[in-house]
Structure formats: C-alpha cells, structure tokens
Length: 259
Image (cartoon, rainbow, N blue to C red; front, side, top):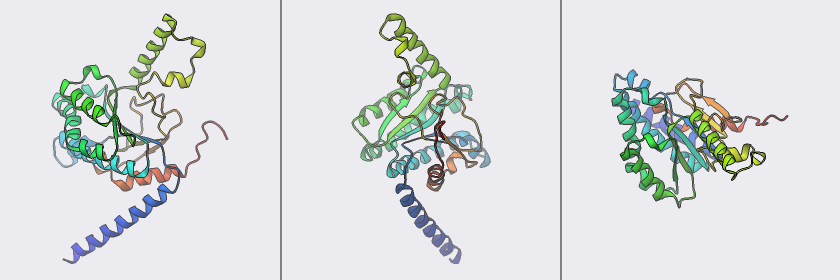
C-alpha cells in the first residue's frame, strides 16, 4: 500500500510538472512544423522478446499522443516518417503489418482526429501501396480536408532522393513544353514541386532510438531545421520528451546563415 501511494504521488507530481512546462512552452514561440523519424519500434519489441510488429503496434499509440499534444501546443504541422522507400527490404510479415497500420490507426482514431480539427495528409509514392492502405488514407484525407487545425502529414512509401528527382523531372518537362521559364525558377518555386507542397519547411526534427542520421528524409526541406536526437525508443517516447525537445528548440538561436 505504501509503495502504491508513493507511485501515485510521484505520478501526480510529474503530471503537474508537465502541465507547468506546457504552459511555459505555449508562452514562447512554438515550432510551426515538427518532423519526426519514429525509430526503435523493432528494438523495443526485441528487448521484450516480442515480435517486431508488437513494437509497431505500440508505436501507433504514441502517434496518437503526440498528435494530441502537438495540436494542444499550437503546432501547425506534424510530419511523421511512417514508411520509407527502403523499408520494403524488411521481412514480408513485417511489411504486411506496416501496410495495415494506417488502416488500423485511422479506423480507431479518425473520429477523434475530426473532433480535434486535425487534417490528414500523405506524402510519398502511392503507386506501390496496397489498395486497402491507400483507401484508408484517402478516406481520412477526404473526411478531414475541411479541418483547419493541425496538419498530420504521414510520409508513407517516401524517399527524399526520389522526391527530388521527380520534382526535377516535372520542372524539366514544364520548361520543355514552355509553361515554365527557367529564369523564373527559384528555391521557393522548386519547393512547391516537392511532395510536401505548401507545407512550411520543418522548424524542428526529432529522431528517436539513438540513431543520428536522416535516412533519406526531407533532405531539401531540412536545410535549416533544428535537430533533436534522443536515445528513447519510439514506443517509450512520452509527452515530456516532446516538451523537452520543443523547450530546447526555443532556447536555440536560428540565424539561417546570418549573424
């Protein structure tokens, strides 16, 4: 009983501390766009002698928590690296499960996303996605397109090099047919040809699990993004970790090449 009371008090103190930190963060400039490389699901499962898909299932719950908190904080866009163009190399059982996750997530949480005024988007090559995955995502996009709150942007079958190459090909074709003059092309215009489209470049990138690399993620868009790395595996990533990342971001000086 004594141990239970100690844990209860500790949990209550932690909750109050988190609320205070959230209030402090909201009083400062909050990053408009946060991108997250959600890494470590498989390792989380392996540490518990569970199949890797158990880690992906647990990670889905974290997506819900981070979406709700980001929306509460006033973040305008949250881009999540859900499946890369290289992830097809993984075992078929794992890939098949990952392709079912968007369906499972959206079926469970879509009413909540609608209620929270969240708009769902996707960026990536849709042509290789299974029909059931694509249908679930497109339904969510359609049902939330009128929402004007947080944009929840899933990078699904996404690779940045492929994205840039496709943008270059589109630009070249438009110049060739005369609908675009090469002299009119600048960085802002080129950005509109990328899959992220009208989204502002990320202000903050978070990567979990201790890996310190970009893994072919938003290479163009991350040019002046602030990076925050943590050893915490994605299924263990909690609200206080997101709060900590944003708090550190708020104390950095962003000069964009200036003084």
